[in-house]
Figure: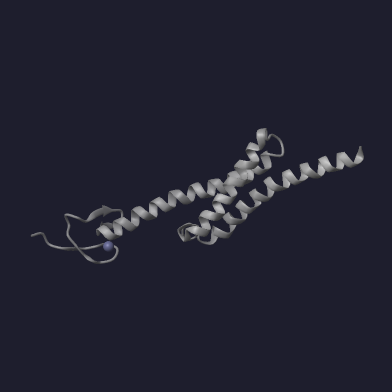
Length: 132
Ligand SMILES: [Zn+2]
């Protein structure tokens, strides 16, 4: 029978055979699970931030080049995807902390850019039509 050790994080008695080494010391299975989950959310959150930035880039880019409304669609899909992901999963807001409103704002900006470019296009066409 092996002697129990205390988990470095939660202090629970842990069998050294099932404990996991980490930067903090020996962790119990529960804390190791929490660590792994946290890492997964961290990388998911990095992708979310990338999608928010991509939404703005696609939205602005659609002003210049927009074959088959590809960039408009990409911008709207990224921006809306970021907002719905953040609404459905509080984990994203936890990971982002104080930056959560900023990232939501960036996603909304991307959607507005994409929609605004298309509105401008409609107005421009309407203006041309009335001038003729
Ligand atoms: Zn623990």
